[in-house]
Each structure stands twice: as C-alpha cells, then as structure tokens.
Amino acid sequence: MTEATRENSFEATLHMVATGAEALGVLAIIIGAVFACYLTARTLMDGADGATAYRTFRRSLAQGILLGLEFLVAADIIGTVAIEPSLQNLGNLAIIVAIRTFLSWSLELEIEGRWPWQKSTSQPNES
Image (tube, rainbow, N blue to C red; front, side, top):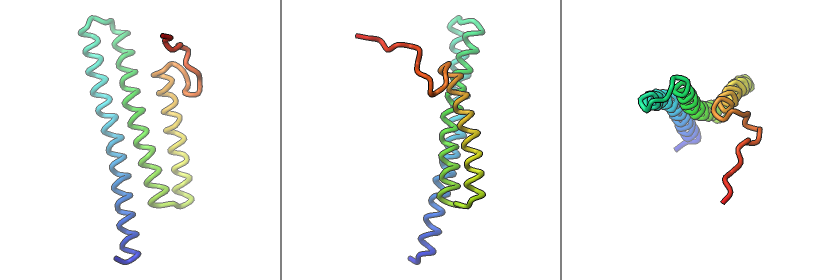
C-alpha cells in the first residue's frame, strides 16, 4: 500500500467518522424532541397544569438539543482539524464553536437555572 493510498484511506475514514458524528447529533435532537413531546403528554395526562407541562417540554427539549450540539461540535472539529486544516477552515471552526458554545450555555441556563460556571444553589443531601 502506497503512502498516498494510506493517506486517502485515513482521510476517508475521518470523513466517515465526522459524518457519523453529525448524524448522531441530528438524531439526538430528533429523539430529544420526540421524547420531550412524550413527557409533556404524560405530564398533562397525569393532571398537571399547562405551565408545568410547558416547563417539562422546554427542559426536555433543551436537553436533547444540548446533546445534539455536543455531537455536532465534535463533528466540526474532526472535519476541520483532521481533514482540512487550513487557516480559513480553522477560523470558520472557531466561529462555529463559539456560536454553539453560546447556545450550549444558554441551554444549560434554561435547564439548570444557572450558568455552567456558577455553583449549584442546592445542597447535597447529608446522610
């Protein structure tokens, strides 16, 4: 096997890994949305009011989106750094990661009620 063939094979493998991570990200968001709808319907059937169901939906949906974003960022990193490491691509990656990081922090604020760097206000149970 020649060096060029090995390099092309490695690049093709990385491309498949990046595509797989993108697919997992999209799948996580879709499954998260379906699961959020299920939980909301179950919450309503259990007799909860609309506000509680709405909070359940938002929190569950945010968790699915957050997981999906993690996979999408990983795919972008693999695709940019490992496959096509040019200065322009690295700049694009930095912008994409910054936007997705901000989205992740916003979703974390939505889910936890605090920024990721803030300490939790709840105290652990002491036994």
